Image (cartoon, rainbow, N blue to C red):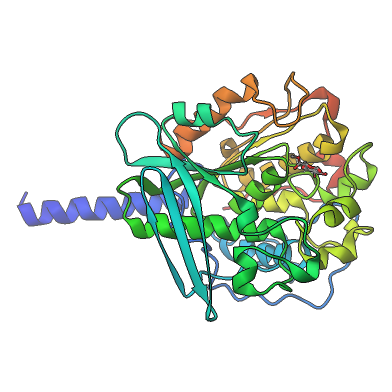
Length: 407
Ligand code: MCU
């Protein structure tokens, strides 16, 4: 075989493998290299959408038809994302006109300019032992993430303070932090999506830095409690994130909105909306009427699909709504299954220690297996649904649709 044609064959093999990896979402392959794969999809939201006491069909388009192929998912996902922005979280602006910054062994700086307004923030980096470049897990907030387990699995920890990007304790009409310095203190986007935007800008900087210290295509995200809500939303809204690991996220996180009014002791929607401006301003019309929401959190998990998702919940504190959380994960798992990626979502609420955001021995192995599979891209996960009997929801009660076999 001539040298030239051999090279050609190798190159076409590489292209074929890359295409195959994109077509087979079940493989723990590289995360898509862009923040939003469906940015070019034409999406027009109707003025109003009929109320539905059950979970919206995650496969049904706005025009009423259902998707039939895996390829249909890309633009259907874009519709779902737009609904989630409009009704629940507020808008996530697209990549700013300018993002610059630096990555060192100890920290990351981020400078953003958009619409003529600028803001900066930074994050701390801790490397694992060994030789880099390393994958990294962005840890939102300073507690409740097993950073020792993350580092022992060979991933760096990027400690990110979400409050620098979206401050708590402000009224909705005077939001503060780097996001609101750029997009305005009266932006209707809630803190969770502002926090998510900050992580996306960190990934922009990782990409630009060229991967000498931290790999840009092997990023995970985690956080506990309010930062579990943030981690979940972050993973849903940036397809460069290969692994999403929300911990004990509670209301406004993984649990289905529709389940909260009926779940004994769960944080009510009005409380999750009112305690901090976590959700977008538009959600205020639905705190007493979740049936009016055209999306629910099983579809947020669907936005993460087929990428790695490890949802960890605590069934011992009623406020954390783990029963509704289990339904969100079971509903999300239907999307994963339809995309041929059923193994890529794991839910785990069967834990002993009842303390909120405790370091839990039960989660150490699944966290490390997920880092291996989705950040180191070797080894596999099995899609475990380890639901505590204390808070086991029933997806069947919440849906009137079945999962299609997508071709
Ligand atoms: C579970 O997350 C929240 C919860 O939604 C709030 O009601 C409570 O005040 O704080 C929790 C939290 O973030 O704890 C650290």
